[in-house]
Each structure stands twice: as C-alpha cells, then as structure tokens.
Image (cartoon, rainbow, N blue to C red; front, side, top):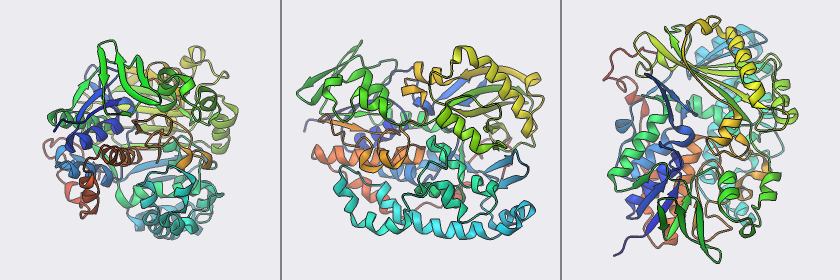
Length: 528
C-alpha cells in the first residue's frame, strides 16, 4: 500500500511530537524548518562552551510526553534523563519574604507560618480542590473543540461547577490565601501563558497544582535537549527533517492546500500540519482572501500574550546558594502587570526570572563556570517601545535588579552574553508581534474560539502548538499534537488507536528515576 504523505511546517515541540506519532502510524513525514536547528522556541543557544535554553526552562507534567513516547515504542525517561527539582524554585518578594517551594506540604506550611501564619493549611485545601479539578478537566484538554456544540459534551457539563468562568485566577487564589504574596505564589504561573493572573481565567489554577503534584523537572542538557532527542528519534523512524528551508509559497485547489513551495523544491502531500507561529505564518503564507475567520484584519484585532526580554549570560564561577529556578516578584506587582498588558510601557521595577541550571547540571558550562538565563516579562511589540533605543538601557536596569536575589556582582563575572528582545522574537523567530506565548488565553480565545486543531478555513490542514487548542506551555503543546494526530489519521483512514492505548496504560512512577537520572555524570550537584 502506498504510504500517505504528510508535511509538517516547523520542528518545534508540537511538530516533532506529531511527526513521531504520524511516522509510527505509517505516514511518510517531512518536516520543513525555517531555522538551522530544531526546537523553535524550545531550542538551544550555544556560545563557545556555554549552553542555554532559548525559551522554556520548566519541564512540567511529564505524563503527556511520556505517553506519546510510549505510543511509539519509546521510554521518555530512558531516552531523556531528567531529575525532579526540590526545591522546585525560590520565590522572593519585593515587599519582603521568601519561599523555597517544595512538594513537601509540611515544609511549605513551616515557611508560610514565618510570614503569613493565618494561611497555614490553605495550601493543602488548594491541592485537594485542584486534584479534583484536573481530573474533571483532563478530558476537555485532551479533546478537540470545533464548534459551540462541543460545549455540550458530558465531560464539559460535568466540569462546569469547577469552572467559574467569570472569576480570574487571582480572584480564585484569594479564596484560599489572605496574604497577597501567597496569592501571587500560586498565580504567577499565568505567565506561562503570557497573561496577568488577574486577567487569566480561574481554570488555570491547575498550573501551580501540576508543579506541586507532578514535579518540576530538569532534562539533562536543558529543555532544548528534549527537542533534539525527539528529532533524532524521528529521523530513526524515517522522518525527513529539512533545516533552513522556509515555506515561500502555497499551491491551492479551491480551499484545499495541495503543496508547499520552498527555494529547494515543491512538497505535495495528503495532509499538512502547521507548527509555525499561527498568526505570523498565516498572514505571511496563506492569501488573505482565503481566510475569513482568521483574516489579517481579524488577527490584528485579537489579544496577544506578553513578550519577554532575555539575557543569556556565561558566568565565571557558580552561584552555589542560588537554586535552579528563581522568580522575583516586584514590590508593585499589579502595577508591573498593568504596564505590560494595558499601558505597553517598560517598568522601572519589573518582576523577573533567573535560571541557575548549573547547580543541577554541569553539562551547560565549562568547569568552574555557569550558564545564567534571565527573563523579564515585557509588553509585546507596541509603538510605545522602540527596542533599538531601549535595549541597552533595559539591559542595565535588568542587571541592576538582579541584586534583589543576591547577584550584585554579576556584571564582573560575565564572560559571554546573548540578548533577545521582543523585536528579535518577531524578526528572527517569526513570532507575531513578538508575543512569545501566542494568542492570549482569555474566554473569547479558548476552546472552539481558538484556531481549531483541524483548521477550519483550509482543507487538509491541521494545527499544533500554542496557537491552537488547548493552548501554550509544553505539556499542552504536546497534547495538541495528540489531538491533531488523531484527527489527521482518522481523516486519512489510518489507525490511531495506539495513541489512546498509550493513555490508558498505568502511569510511570517518575520518582523511580530521580536518584539516578544523571548517573552518568557524578559531578552533578544534588539539588534535591
């Protein structure tokens, strides 16, 4: 039987996960990647002997990718060694106070008692409630939403009482914690979606629950290593990955996409999967006259996530007392959020995140040195901010602010440096408006109101990644690949039951791998 041909646009995490599943089902898969490396935003930046994750550094909820690996006959933790971090991260507050966040509930209550004694015990109640909430919402996050009729599914109706659609994530957390610092401690994860917790729907209280229940993990070599290993496995399964080969034009027959053109040739296929940034790729590639719901005008009117200002610093020495992940909350957090999302200006007192991964993984920098990753949430591209003018100034401000977590000497220790601004995200990484977390996750842009996994405007086109359902974040992007793979295989008359069968297997005990995940590198520090 002739193999069905599928072309995937983009070798990001969603595209790679889709390629694995389609190849396992017997498809002839080709990936077209515009850049010279795989991973997209989940790729590596390598400068001399320093290695950094470009984008995501938190690896959460391994269950989804583990099931994808299992469905194609692989074992995630064997293919990609990981360690569960404890503490998961350190939170410091501009108003005073600190939390070394751990899944040990007794230890969390002990720390909470130091600055918010009235809230001792509230975390356990939050965990119990969200354990039920995740169970109710998992079927929703794992299913496509193609129309308003899908809102009447039994699974969604059964979850309605947990939804509270008009309650923000911040308001939801205020039901558990009286201290504003603790509200932010369990709501800042909205930034994984590029949103303010006071604008983000209350559904996403499950994000911080996932961290405490299922762990924050570090793959050896960083999250980018997951993409690189997936690409290696895909190629071993026959997937062809064409790097430095952007799509330049499309061939259509009515509303059906029949072929993609690059400078190297024309690729015809039975189906196409788009893993590129949705709004950027559509506006640049698909003629506007073929798009009604997602025309250029309508895309311009949508709400988009924040962006990020990034510094990647190769540092002399190692900050031994700084945990792997560190989040500093501005003393004027809500003002900072307003400056990002409404005013579209740069803050003088921004919140920021620092990854000090070399305390866990010695493969990221030369001996005696370390790789430091700094992220500052900022507005997406907007006329109010000219990064050709502001970049150097904001770099100095950011380095000054690092003293808040004990890095006052960082300037003297920098050996290599790389920078990414929102303008770079837009121009070099092809991200619409530099909005690194895609379309915002408000109620008007979720479920059936998000671009559909089986794209509704073009026949033979399927979407994966943060721009489609269920949304942004690595576990959710991997889930989008399962949804879209099932739809595509079923539409082509191919067997997709292996995807569901992997989901029904007993879940792995990830903790079995914690002690020896990095056993091949005895010099790695014990950060547990």
